Image (cartoon, rainbow, N blue to C red; front, side, top):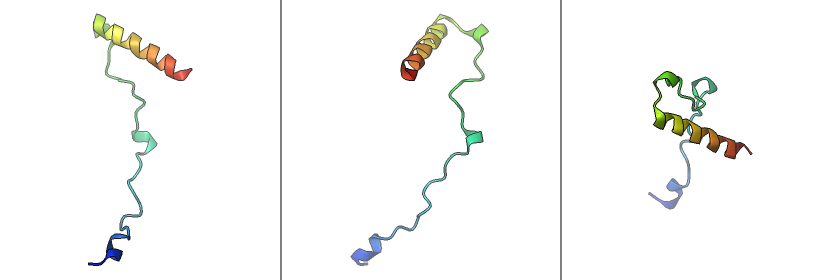
Amino acid sequence: MGKDEHKSKNNKNGLPQTPKNQKNNGIDVEFSGELADQADMKAIERSKKAKNRNNR
């Protein structure tokens, strides 16, 4: 086992990328506003403010 055996790569394809139809946009579709408590509403408000800061 010489030095040259470690220089070649067997996996040249790399990792597969996730198809666009399997990606989600981070929105929780199971969340119901009717069931939200005060902590949930504050978290949603903080999330919206953070998103606005990042979009500037």
